[in-house]
Length: 330
Image 1: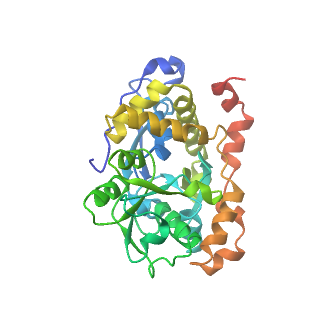
Image 2 (image 1 turned 60 degrees about the vertical axis):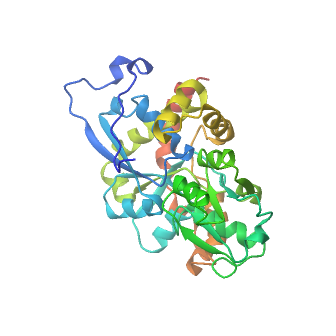
Image 3 (image 1 turned 60 degrees about the horizontal axis):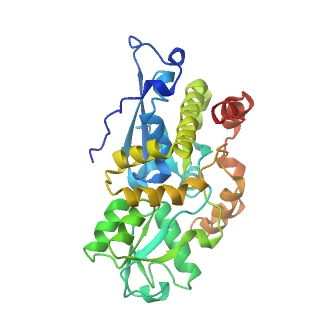
């Protein structure tokens, strides 16, 4: 995949003509970082293909940044980060970053660890290597949590290796560079079809986790609140189309993931669809759950206020306007 994606032409009939900027109006380029091309980023991809951003005069481009998604936002090379989490944002803020979560489209730990058939349990990973997208990212966080749950000490009992992305983790499994890997759909189903067994489902840990968060800099909310609001409105529209139009959603997912296997796409869609949120408030409980675990790495996280990492005001303003009720229908 090229680092920057080509902006996708939109389907005009999905939006009222009066809401779309005229062809003569120059569109403002908005850059968005995503950690991976996975279904957790599907609201963004759907909004792109449906032309939701162009209605607000935005030409949105995304770049895949792996575990460095939050760093791209902090550094200012992007205006938004989609797919940041209740691990990455607090860690950045506690280090002094001007970032905040304004929305979240899924609040569960939706990752699974897959392995070669001969690995029967997490305990069998002792002395072996687990692949993650990148050290410090969500797959790394989920992996360490799962290993500790099994009584294993990350980096002592089991090595963790950042391999660059979720599809790259599947490739590392096939090449036997790692003996297990933490994945999200659709790559998890790609691995399953290739013969790698699901070793552990992180959703079973019972931890609330912001896995599809939208992050911005606080300064952006202060200086350009309307743009932030309109970007989020387009994302909410994307999530609505994603969950209500399966055929359109499958075309979008196939295009962005470059997966042509319809069975894998349908399995991925069916797995994640129930977890997408209609009103995407970032959960304070998810932040609290994550901070409790993060405190083992960052002691300051133990006494941190979850509200320090969340700004619910933009979602609240959109909800109060009746926008969400209008696009979903009563």
